[in-house]
Amino acid sequence: MNILIFGPNGSGKGTQGSLVKKKYDIDHIESGAIFRKHIGGGTELGLKAKAFIEKGELVPDDITIPMVLDVLKKSSSKGWLLDGFPRSIAQAEKLWDALQKDGEKLDYVIEIKLPREIAKARIMGRRLCANDPNHPNNVGIPAIAPNGDKCRVCGGDLSARKDDLDEEAINKRHNIYYNTEDGTLAAAYFYRDKAAEAGFKYIELDGEGTIDEIKDTLISQLA
Ligand SMILES: [Zn+2]
Image (cartoon, rainbow, N blue to C red):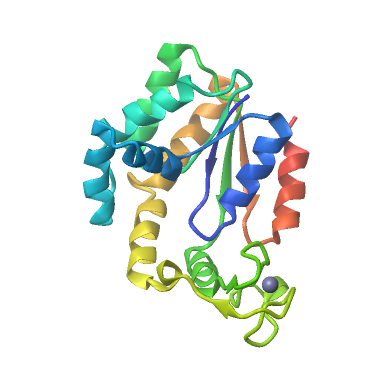
């Protein structure tokens, strides 16, 4: 079972990806983790990637694609869920060609749709509980709004991650994601247009629902 998942930062893509991973017992390959692994391991590709990440820039394809393909090849025989890649139309095309060449078929491509302003409000609204990072608190999502300025689950103190309040960085990431010309949405649409002919299913999910609502819709559409 080989799956691609698309969704902007703030759409709950990571959470839904974890559910899919569990359902099929496949490897959840998250592009950030690929970078961290290579950078942590001090590989040549990792060192090159690091310089770009530190500037907040996209890592060039000639560094990223070999890393991704390497990890896909070493993944579980049950398959993989690729999350956070491809991010551009160029990467989408190169990945497609590489998969065709390797005889790897895609089963599903999932797109979580969420308006840009809502995605941004959700990122900036995240609050972290001092007692348990898994306690959900978000001032931008009514269903999990904190209790005043305390954790809605345990009453613990809340804080915001510095990255989550960095509006410029969020805008930069969203500029890439929401670009329908040659950015990440263009990559998603590249696969959407291939789906019928190539025999995989393209699943569009409404990201404005709660995590459980999105999960239920997703599960109902997967075999
Ligand atoms: Zn808590």
